[in-house]
Length: 123
Length: 123
Length: 123
Length: 123
Image 1 (cartoon, rainbow over the protein chains, first blue to last red):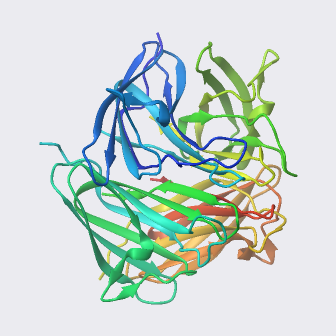
Image 2 (image 1 turned 90 degrees about the vertical axis):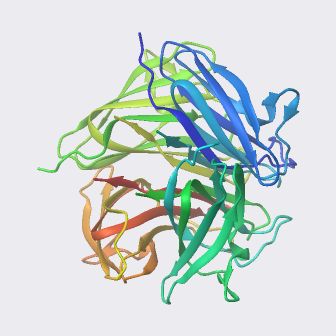
Image 3 (image 1 turned 30 degrees about the vertical axis):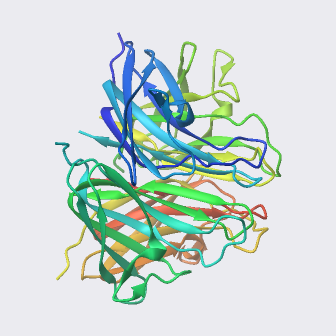
């Protein structure tokens, strides 16, 4: 039996899906989650915007002893997706402790730009 | 009623507005704030320099359940703005807990460079 | 006698070895460890995947009062290495406290992209 | 009277001064320090290497209510400097609490790459 590690709630204030890709790689964001436990983790992701109501409760499962690098462009709730080219923020709630990192590849130009942060854990 | 989350005071030691842009995107910094609460958050931003007095108390409002990605070039106090091409540091104080991340897009060259950090929370 | 500092367990959810290099530099990741103590530190590194069992217990020694910037492509266990082009996650356990940062240089394109995060410490 | 904020000891495991610059900007690292206090802060910086003894106690002063973005290439102790092109790690000790961030601009290629992390605070 492997124990769950990390925190159950994580925040990423700077979400942004670049609208275009000019190079050989595609612009994207990844929410990277590690589940150290033997049990699966059920994630509920809510995204907040500058000028409209949040999209709440997009669900993702991470199996036990696995990582998942979640493309934000693939998240949906009732057919609604995160629009590209719009500033937003991410809240991730898990039923068991996990660890969360956020990375963005911006390929708006022919050459890539990369950024990454550890998400901010709440108690 | 949604609860406020995070911290009331955040620090970003490495502020810098690149003076030029060569690509299709414009060089800029964003202070990205998430307000999880139903109440609005009133932010007071102070910037520190290497060789002059700080600019204190630039005010920004973040509505409840919203994010705001604040362009530092748009901040002002009594008509005074943050100069470009100068190293500075940022202190953000909020009346209710929020979560803060800082990102910079440097388009000094034709191709972009990106960096991002979670701001440092003080108790 | 210098004291050990930091934490004994660190997590990096976003591991990825870029499969190709187009520029003059080679794409790579580094797990950068500082051992402040006078004693050597014995690290055990486990990597987790999205769809297969983890590779557990790859060992690395960091001498006392030294840093080591570990290339992930050099890690192995029973001849098994971390594959390139595959999302994975890293757990690092040390017998004494150390401090851990993770950086990636992506040279998939002719121009470099860089990202770095402090690893997430567990108690 | 303004109060000191932050921590007195900070660690950056991934130090590296790129040996070359190909673009219009010069490759460099900055240790960015904010001193919120009205008193000046005296910093003592030690750097650790992979295969030799540390360079200890390089001193820097940050005036009260000021930031300083310290170029690592300018640090010296008894005429000894940090070599370029060599992996190293940084320990910063301050006599009063400060906040520390580390950023690197890599201009090895014509186009820039940027990375930044908040330094790791020790208690």
